[in-house]
Image 1 (cartoon, rainbow, N blue to C red):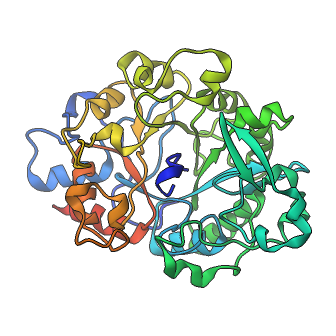
Image 2: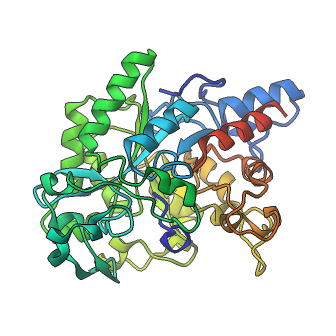
Length: 394
C-alpha cells in the first residue's frame, strides 16, 4: 500500500473483538473518561469507533495490518511474506493489485516491477524496458501490463530496498509473483486449517491510469471477490485505494468494507487531477470531506503524518484533530506505515547513527496508539503486536 514510494517507499486469535460504542464515550485520544484502568484497557481493545454503514468489522482494535505481508522480513507481496505475517499473528494481511497484459490481477506494490523482481536479469525481456507516465510521473522500467501472466510467472521476487534491508536479500529468487486469485485460495486454505477466516486488505493501484489503457481494475477485482464469497458486508476483507472514485465504483459492485487512503497534506488524489476536481487531501480531512467519504466508505487510511505531523527536524509534534473528526463522521482510521528502522521512524525515536538499525519503534507505536487510531499498517507485525499488547494492557 503505502504511497510514500520515495521513503521506502479472521484475526489470528487475540483479545478484544470490535464492539459498537456510542460517540459520547469518545475523547480526543480515544480513551473513555471516568472508567477504571482495567475498563479503559478493555475499551481500547474493543475499539473506539462505531462500525459505520452496517459494516461491523470483527477485528481487534487497534488492528495490526501486515503491510505487504511482512515487508520488514521477506520480499514484499510474496507468499513467503504473506505467510510470515499470518504466522506472526497479524490481524489482516495486505495486498496491492495491478493487471497483466491478459487481464489477470497480480500482487505488486507498483506496476513497475523493476525493483521487485529479477526482470532485469532476463535477456528475453530486455526489449520490454520502456518509459511511461504513471499518475503524472515519468518512470523507466518494466511494467506488468506489458507481460502476460505466463511471462510474469517466469520471474522471481527480490527485495525492493536492499540497502535498508540487506538480510531480506537472502530470499531473492525464492518466490514468484502471486496472482490475487492465488491469494484468495491461500486465505481460504489457511482459514480452514486455522478454523477462523483469514482477513485480507486489498488496494487497487493506479485505477484511473489503467482505465485509460482499457483495464477495469474494479470489475476484475469484484468478479474475484464474488467468486470467493468476499463480496459481502461481513466478508473478512477490506478494500482500499488512494483514488476515492475507485472505492465508489467498488461500492456499487460489492458490499465489502472499504477505506479511502490519504496521501500527504497538500497532495491531490490522481483521479481528482484527471477529472478536474480541485480538492486536495487538506479538503478531505476536514469534517465536510470526512462526511463525504463516509457516504460511500467505512474508513480512511491516512499517512501517519496526518495523525501527528513532524517538525522541521523530523520530530513528532501535537496530534491533529483528524482522529476525533473521523470518528465523529463514523469512520475508522488505519494509518500507514510503521517500520522498525531508524530511517523510517520519527527523529525522536531513532537510536544511534545507523539509519538501518532498529530504533525505538515501541515508543513510536505508543504515541500513535494514544491518538485513538483503530489500527495501523506495519512492516513488522510482531513488533506491532507487542506494542499493541503493551498499550492495551497499560
